[in-house]
Amino acid sequence: MASASTTRRRVVLASLAGLLFVCAAAGGTGWYALRCNRADYQNRASVSWVNPSEEYLYACGSVWHSLDAGNAWAQIPSVGLPFWLRDGRIAIDLTPGRLYLATLLAVPSSLDCPLCPLTRVQPVMYLSENGGRVWREAQRFPESQTGITSFRSLSADPDYPNSGWAILVTGVRVVYWATNNGGHSWRLTCEERLGFMCDAPSDFMAAHRAK
Image (cartoon, rainbow, N blue to C red; front, side, top):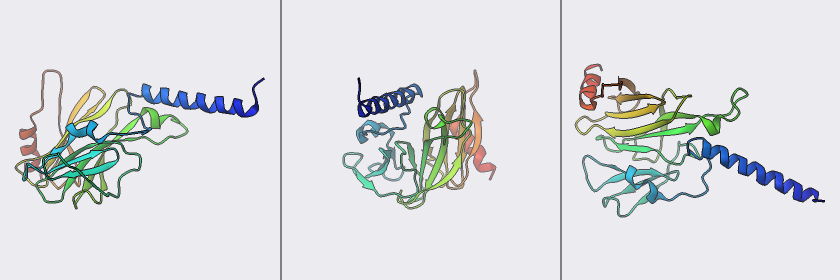
């Protein structure tokens, strides 16, 4: 007959196994971060429009900075970002020191949705004015409760300072969001439909005319 301690151990292990299974079933978001390799996210590095040798990267819960085209990276101590945030898409604005960070946050649990942290995510944009040392939340975007949610891309405009765009996928919707006020607010400029593709440059010109 198993001892009480052995029984408790089995219960704990079974619970952990069930939790990992749910995380895997939730689209691989894996809101547990047992280990992380910065090199796995190297393809998401953002290159400066002003200095091609300067890059920023957000990976493994940290902001990284390179001045030699990604050969060597320095970790930037950052405040204002959620603790368990694993990765996100970062963009370098033409304005010195201004960075945009698009990421997905786990939706907090509630009585109506106790498993929300494992099954739902909230798209959020963060803004830094000092090269990634301090961040603040700029805007939350509509989430999808019936499909995959992800940021397809995030980029600063190469011609206009204080401007950028993000492409957000929520379920079957693909929508373009733009900013022309330094990332303080983002507005929907275009939505792709069957037989219709958005044009980012023309969307940006429309956004600038609508200041």
